[in-house]
Image (cartoon, rainbow, N blue to C red; front, side, top):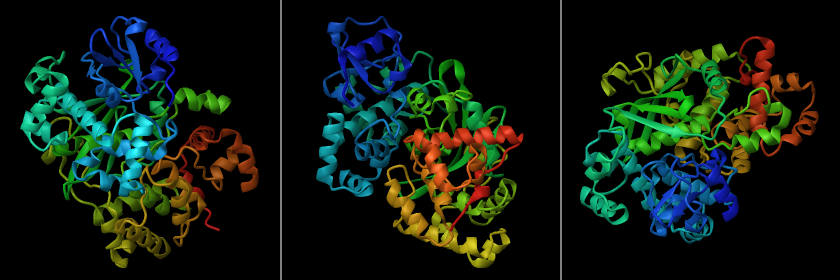
Amino acid sequence: MKLDPDTCYKAVASHDRRFDGRFFVGVSSTGVYCRPVCAVRTPKRENCSFYETAAAAEKQGFRPCLRCRPELAPGHGLADISGRLAQAAAAMIDEGFMADAGVARLAERIGVTERHLRRLFDAQFGVSVMEYVQTQRLLLAKRLLTDTALPVTEVALAAGFGSVRRFNDVLKTRYGLTPMAMRKRAADGVADRLVFELGYRPPLAWDALLRFLATRAVDGIEEIRHGSYARTLSVESGGRAHLGWVRIEHIAKRLVLRVTLSASLAHVIPQALGKVRRLCDLGCRPDVVDRHLGELALPVPGMRLPGSVDGFEIAVRAVVGQLISVVHARRILARLAEVAGEAIDPQTVTPSSQSPATLCRTFPNAAAIAALPPEAMRAAGVPPGKARTLRALAERVASGTLALEPHAPPEETVAALRDIEGIGDWTAQYVAMRALGWPDAFPGTDYALRKVLGVSTVRAMNERTAQWAPWRAYAAIHLWHRYEALKGDAMTPTDSEVTT
């Protein structure tokens, strides 16, 4: 992104939330860098310099503002940055990937050489990979010191520092503070639970997002209650799975989602928060999307593209839901979780009144589904044909030959999915929408979409929806929402798979 200083300064002077997270402003008179929405008095123009990332600002010697807290800024969406590979790598770093790996492994994961990744990062962000990593670790540590009561040792480890001594040295060098001094500066004190706030660019159609998730909620895994969404999580890190739960609430006045994690997820906080960001599409630019969709977006501004906490889970949901009702699909998925998911006790992972007592299982991972015998599939209610499809899908994901994550190339991933017997274009496009977060994916064979648009062929559908590219996935969510409103009840789009 080319930063125009005059435009950036106007955004800072007006506290324009559309620019929150898109750039940071360094103020030479104070030595700190801020978000464009910082509530302090607007600095003079001659004292301001502008940076695309927090890492770039820190590279120039600026410290993070303790008032607007740059670590709370919304992130980038997939379509915000022209260098998609660099953005994918940055997202993986934000979510703690480098805690267990180095630059070479990161490059391998996104499909480029280490040398090329370094070039991409420097060209896209103006910093090296490790400078970006160091900044993200420090910002996470700052957040944990400010928002939680975790011991300093656990903060250092959760943020990715190898030792408390290393953490203390880096914090002192970069920010001029010790961990305890930073904790004492927290304006509101610290919480005795893992509670975080994730910002977004308004508007946010929270009720529509919650309804979408509630319609598809699987008993034992998900719970919607009093306007909040909770579910179990399994986060792989350090060679083992960390099991727990997350609860998400909308705090409209603060323009944030409040996220509560079980204590069992204390060592995988960045990974867990990353899953929440993807699930709720917090990197979305609703001003850009809604403007492009025009009249379609007017009834429900700020619609998000519901993502996932695990891409394989979305693929399983799509396959199971082919040509059956959402209620039937949910029953089968719940039974699959009973036979292949891992059991958790919410009161064990965090004994408190906040524990979602109805949650007891994690969604089965690829290895567990691949290992299920045919009789277990039948007992769960999975027909033989779908069982074969699920097994083939699980084997590819478990072996690493198929990645269902936001960094995966959408066209190649859709083609790979369609190569699996039993998966047609609808399922592949649906997975691209929710697991990959691809904004232009569109399940053109969907019955509900055809009905609400009044078309009868895929060709007519493509012609009608071309106007919404490259945001057709958001258009699909709006159209499903419209269809459900017209029907007066909720219908799953998975009623409509066409595999021919």
